[in-house]
Length: 167
Image 1 (cartoon, one colour):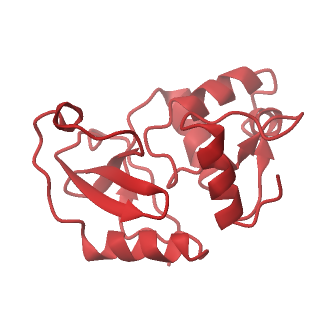
Image 2 (tube, one colour; image 1 turned 90 degrees about the horizontal axis):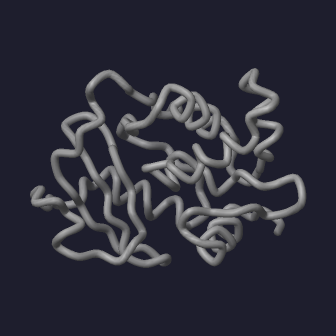
């Protein structure tokens, strides 16, 4: 199966939420008719659902989660539709190309996307990623070590362990 495409033309609106229990806790996934729009590992409450309906987790998505937490690469049956700036989307598209079990530094990503002075902006784009896990910002490290992670270093280390990334 090929890597998911990242759609940006008006398909970023979340229409419903689904929940899925994983070894890392409950994950909330925002969906629309064609794509995953958001992923949250944060504490769940009714206010965070923004009044949108909750739907059953699609079996293909449940299977994807199960396989990932067994150590297999993610093969998404859905496109990704994150909402962000042109620069953020450029960074996120690059992140989707980082293979499982490998990392890239903020500076290296900046160079590879043709913006060698933008390593801090790459870090900010990673921090603004609305679809962590599927857009694997956890695979981005600093030149000096593990780097940050918007969902916390404990979760980043757990994801590293799942993907057999040394830390």
